[in-house]
Length: 352
Image (tube, rainbow, N blue to C red; front, side):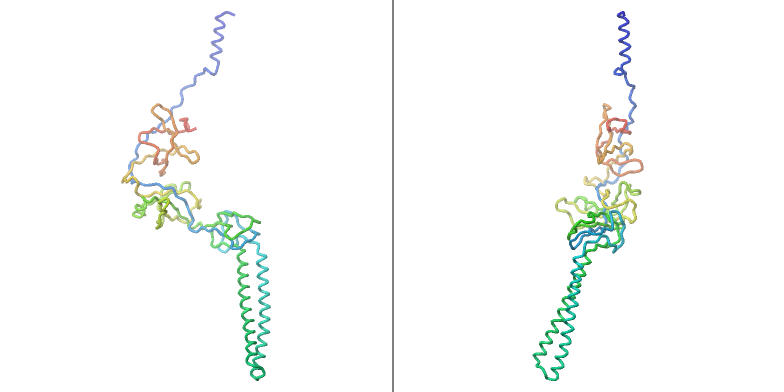
């Protein structure tokens, strides 16, 4: 084979190699320049939690094995409904023994009563002395006192037998049942936790510097419940309560915002956000920045955006989100004016 033929074959082979194939130009990434979307009154955002006004952890006053469990987490119960039962055989035997002792004491009292009546008749006929009658009277008094003591002991034993049944103190929803049949119930050990779903509230810890603004403008406070239909935008609470105490360790005070009854999908422990009037910076108004919700990158507990620098290189930057208005989300921190953000993070490459 000639030298020219070998060169031609080598050239054709190199053209067919995929390592030398040049890809076409990448699709352009749409960029959003961060601009101010007007000004608004300075506000502070606080993380909060949904709580039940009435939440009760039930426990037993006596020890014993759990022999019957009638509810599970998520069940709705009525006031007075039996939730679980503890083995009460020993207590029942004690109550039966006390009842038998009462019957014996009553029999002794009956004998002492007849004896007292006979001694009284003999005393009237002067057949016995006053001392003999006084002894009969003392025996009757002792028998009567013994009957009262044993009756009280029997009532206490019967009352204690009722401690082996745990009933619902009010109508509500069972939140947790940390025991099962066969577990040993001890005084103070949690058996059932339930709450009243008709009365819920939002509780937040407010820094000491903002407590004055809260007390001065309670009607300006707003809350939102992310993930709950109809409450993803700031709402006005029905009532605001500021607790008259400040934690000496964290220097925060608590506020409670009442929620309307019957909100679907709401449960104690859910995350909430509270908006307070005034800001710790002392500014009367602040510039607001908004981005489309599609530009937000969410990874577990982190939220961020893909920022494009002057060289066109993308990088993931964490941001803090504020209120949601339609399809736009307010950016509270993490970005500056004139920053360039990828409108579609998946196409920018840095969000993978």
